[in-house]
Image (cartoon, rainbow, N blue to C red; front, side, top):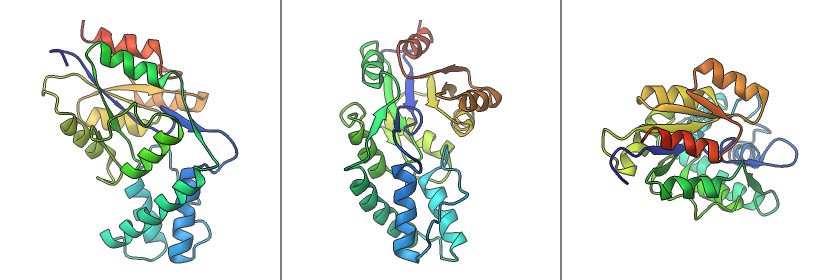
Length: 230
């Protein structure tokens, strides 16, 4: 990466990929099934907002609501069962990209920008979702922060920055679809780029103070990122 080029960290759900079909989506369904298997709860995700949340934070809350110990062993058990269900669900329910994700990442790389992941998904869940959307070879999973690393999104972003190995002077941009992405960007001194596919998401990102908002990943986002290095 040339001196002065940016690091762009992408959230996944609602930012680079989404699903078609009825709600709940594959991720929420897999979490609910994992808790049902382990603790006999019909739907432990009821009333929990997953958008912008982290898998570790969600699982911790579900365990506490179930009256179970939210220790590392219990969290790991839920994650393991969740991955089993998610992989099975994705055999029939696919994710799709939001905009031109592949060409966006390619264009950023060709112009010297670094790309990484900053997501609330556990790493294996991120891999499965990216694979289902045909994006498994677009992102390097070693260059990212995940919901298995921390329940706090700002800590996930900070870890992603370290794993990408950029210099302290490198401009960092966090691309996401919720206020939590904006807050995490601010916490690490990064710019916040919003991706809004609905009026509600646009309003939330605007209120949170996103530096700019796009409808999808594409050439406008690339142009904005590259303008920071000129």
